Length: 100
Image (cartoon, rainbow, N blue to C red; front, top):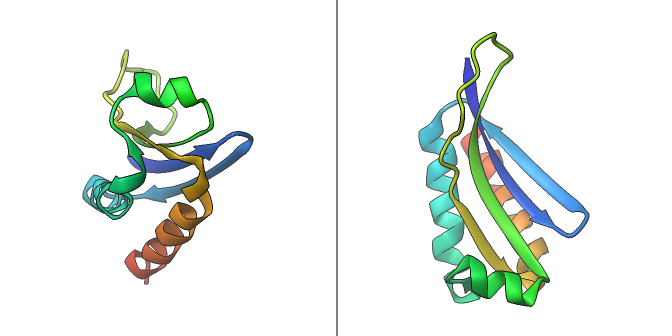
């Protein structure tokens, strides 16, 4: 059985939310991208030059099995660090609505 993990990372601070269905997680991932697009770094190279960034990913997580796949394609997006708490607050609010 798999679930999906939306993660927001900034320096030593890591926040994550799990979703039973991929559609819910990916939809929220895309909503965050749209809402904060003016604060998004358009390339990984640009973000890594700055170093003080917020990273957002969504990944499928499989519960322990004897069969492990080699890799999954996991989208990641980088934002300006100043938006970390605002992004976390937005995700938390939307996550509460999804899980009512």
